[in-house]
Image (cartoon, rainbow, N blue to C red; front, side):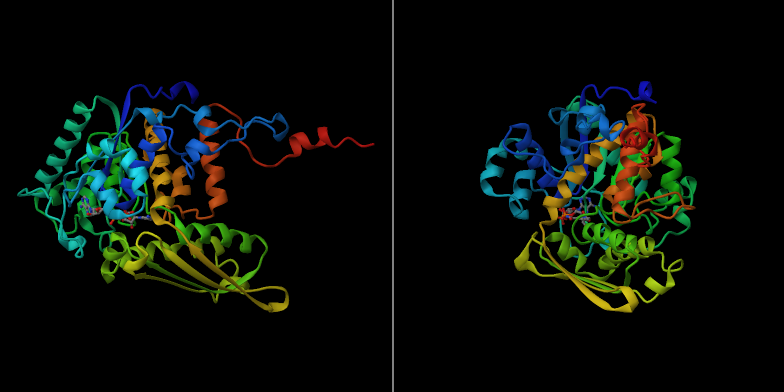
Length: 441
Ligand SMILES: NC(=O)c1ccc[n+]([C@@H]2O[C@H](COP(=O)([O-])OP(=O)(O)OC[C@H]3O[C@@H](n4cnc5c(N)ncnc54)[C@H](O)[C@@H]3O)[C@@H](O)[C@H]2O)c1
C-alpha cells in the first residue's frame, strides 16, 4: 500500500458546517499551536505514538512522524453558520477559551467569516439565525454550497479539502425512501423532499466534489444508502457519527473492562447538565432523541446481553441531558453503575466527570480532518470504519455491527496505519518472540 499513499503537498482546506463552540475551539487551538503558544493535547495524530515491530525493538514513533499527514501549518479553515459572527466573535460567545489566548490569535480568527448556511429551522427549532441561503429547490441549495466550496478552494489556494460537520444536532428521523438510492435522493432534491436534512445538503455537495465528509453529530447525514453510493461513485471517504467525548468516552473505557472480568451489570444511569448552544438545541425533545439513540447504542454492543444473559440481560440503561445555562460548555456528568460480582454480590461505581465539552471534541475534529485526508490520498473510499475510535455511533456497512470498545477501535486504527505504511500488523500474540526472550536456565 505504501507507494499508493500520495504526499500531502500544498494546503489542506478544512471546511466546517457549524462554526460554534467545537469548531471555534479547534480553529483557535490550531492557530495558537502554530504560534507555539500551546500543545495539541488530546490529539492522537499529534501527540500519540505507535509501536512498530516487536516490543523489544523499542520503535514507537509519533504517529505524525510515521505517516504522511498534512502539517498544521498547511491547514486553512472555513465554514458556514446560521449566525454571521466571525470566528473570533463566535469563540468569545462560546466562552470556552480564555480571552488571553483568543486575543493572541484574534487577527487569524477575525479573518474567518462564515458563509451563509443551508438551513431549515424545522431541523433545529431552538436556533433563530438569519445568515441563511435562499433557493427555490434543495438542488439549487446544494449547487450554492458547491459554489462556496469551489470559491474557498481557489481563494485559499488549497490542493485538497475535507469537511467535518460541526453543526447542531438535527431532529430525530428515520431513513425513508428518499434516502434509499442516489437517484431517489437527487429526485428528492429537485422536489424539495422534507426528509432531506440540511446536513445532507452539505454532505451531498462535498461528496459530489470528491471532498471527504465526517459527521460529528448523531444526525443520519451520510449514514444512508444514497450517500454511501455517492461516496463510492466519487471515490470519497465518509465517516460518522457523533464525536465520542465525555460520558460516552468514559463508558467505552470502563464497560470493556467490566466485561473483560466477567462482572455483571444491572443498571447504568447517566445524566448530564450543560449550558452551551448545543445544550439549548438538545433541550428540544426531537433533537434530544437523536442524541439519545446515539448514546444508548454503546452498552449493548459491548456487553452482548444475548450471549451473556446471566451477566447483562437485566441491564437497565438510561441517559439524560439537561440544559443548565450556568455551566456553559463545562458539562458535568454523573454515572451510577450497579454491578455484581462473585456469587451475585452487588457493588456500585459512581463517576462524576467535570469535563469541558469542546476541549474534548476539538482534537477529534483535527484528527478526523487529517485522517480523512489521508484516506483520500491512500485511495480509500466509502465508509472509513477504522475511524470508529472517534465516534459514539460508528458508521459501518449495514451487515456489520459497530465496534464500541475503545481499545479494539484503537487497535484497528493503528493496524490500518501500519498496513498503509507496509509495516507488520501487531496481533499482541507474543509467541513469535517470547521464546527467544525466556531462555531456560
Ligand atoms: N462538544 C462535544 O463534546 C460534542 C460531542 C459529540 C457531538 N457533538 C456535536 O457537535 C456539534 C457541535 O457542537 P457545539 O458544541 O459546537 O455546538 P454549537 O451549538 O456551539 O455549534 C453548532 C453551530 O452549528 C450552527 N448550525 C446549526 N445548523 C446549521 C446549518 N444547517 N448550517 C450551518 N451551521 C449550522 C449553529 O448555529 C451553531 O453555531 C453538535 O451537533 C454536538 O451535538 C459535540
